[in-house]
Image (cartoon, rainbow, N blue to C red; front, top):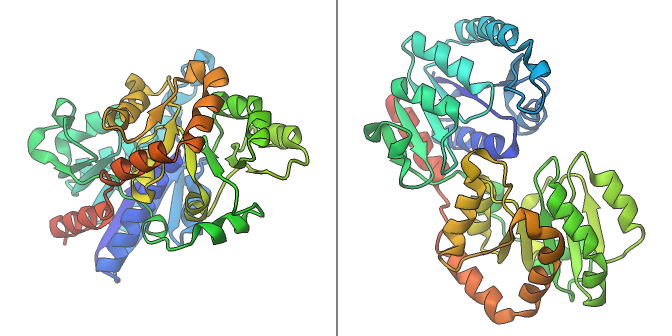
Length: 362
């Protein structure tokens, strides 16, 4: 019986591809045992069990750039995490370990590599994370979303697979009318889906709040994921508006995508991958402080193919509402963007990755 550990998390962009890979492994080899390892206090500790998998937490945190004082305990956490990892690895005895990025992936893969166990890296972004770069030399295989990653990883280890998208999204078969109605909104009105990430995106949220009257007077509806930290503030602002559905987090994203005529989103790698699969006209507002500004790179990859629109984060407050409204009103532009973004979709990355992993372990 094969045993595999999947390590990493911190954001949905790491967690959901990890779960997609786990599901593909199970589908191909039902007897496989899968254990997740994540960082205590991070969202993987909630989302992974919800997906039906066991997860072990370790005490690890990243470098805090905003407050150097908060980094005092970091070396102790790192040392302690290696002891925790050693116990997990020795108890579980994995045949292979997959790192998907995030704080917890580094100590798990580093220790595993020291024991000669095959390790695999999934890098979803166009700019590789520092942990993955450090781990690449001893990795068996490195799965990447697109070309040009030789500047980060050994070329002979790279396999271009695309990013794994959740099967619930790939296989969704819900009509727009049903989807819109499930949010208690009117199927006869154009609907904008706003997703700023699980924690919320301040610039997007502020811009949407600033544009509420614009959407109202144009008889446009909103499905608004405002984020865990900011949803209460915006929910109060929305008040009793009947054209706005607002929540901190959307669990069934496939339903939200099905309901949308236009999407407003950050440009993280997984958001981009999902939007290609669901074939939706999108206005990206890239997070400008992502490493190497990789979200702008992600967005421009589509903008240059006339597959998406983009508004800069610093210009969102005044420009996002009008740009979105113009897109809602232009059926021709929506049709062009839909056709072009659909051509970039990858729907089987999870299966390709799973097959390669199983080929390289017992």
